[in-house]
Length: 157
Image (tube, rainbow, N blue to C red; front, side):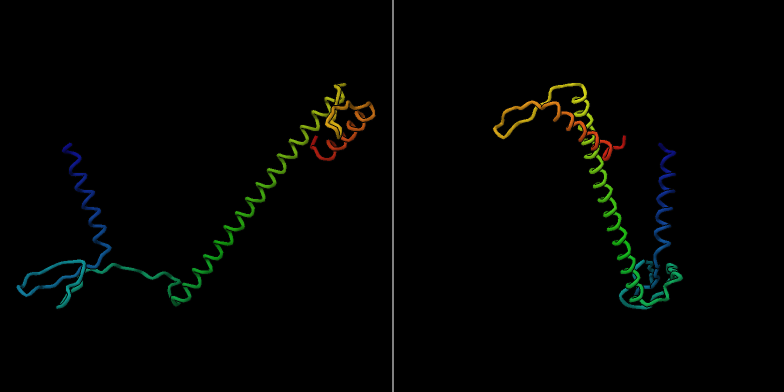
């Protein structure tokens, strides 16, 4: 435990030194002749600046503030445009994915129906009165041909 205390103090001092390095330090003497040090200047009197943070202007800082504001606006517009394009591409991809999933489901259903017809299973439909009517051999062959055409044109088999 004693070993952790010096490390803690060392880290605290390093943090304070870093924070102090980034600030301006002012020195002045009051009416009693005492010297004061602070990061804020006194309201009145003769002060001396001991350390001022070094803020270097960037290479493109020679432009006026309105020029910087315009470049920020241009950057913002470009960002919004990229974001809108990404959202549009994502929507398009999602729609395409849903379309492909629906097409695949239709193909599977068509394959099942064709298999049922080819296996000789009895097929029925409902007439206008709501009664079940079994398909004739001609209707079964016609349905099978239509399913084969659908599968060959729409499915990737």
